[in-house]
Image (cartoon, rainbow, N blue to C red; front, side):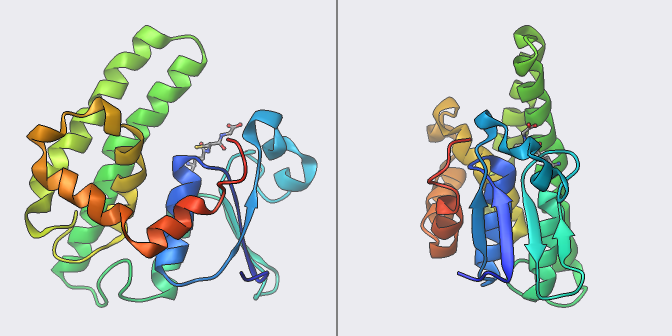
Length: 208
Ligand SMILES: N[C@@H](CCC(=O)N[C@@H](CS)C(=O)NCC(=O)O)C(=O)O
């Protein structure tokens, strides 16, 4: 564990994607688990790092002043830059843009509606949340077509797999896997990766 890099988070999709990206990039970090149900994210010392009171937050103390990144997807981009070739192909060829294309598909067409649905159900608007949840699930399962070469953006693991993985895992009981043989194979493949296991465990001792 490195005290130089810290990742504040909880066992939620955004924090876990960031933790998996850092682990896949081979970057050691100290997980700082926050208990969201107790309101740790609104403690003044945490708000000084992340004024919106959300997780995750990444801090790199090796630079002065320390580098602070709040958005999970910005942390993933940072991990990608630190370890060229691990989360996206090196260089600027077509394959890099395929990775970005698929990465942002999951971020904007799957994760964003699922967050919207979560918010609506939290504020008592269950009925309104249903179409958004359905949309997120439909967009996820449409990715069966992405998997002809094994991974979400081709023959190699990339940040596109990270962006798809935590949501797919969270809705696994809502999916009829018999219709999605490639995706079933893909989910097992991603789950078996040592760095993915490491990332998933990062905040395991804390509730969220
Ligand atoms: N766009 C942000 C979203 C962060 C976010 O919504 N985090 C949620 C957990 S998934 C959170 O901290 N919720 C606690 C709260 O709002 O009090 C990201 O991707 O990092």
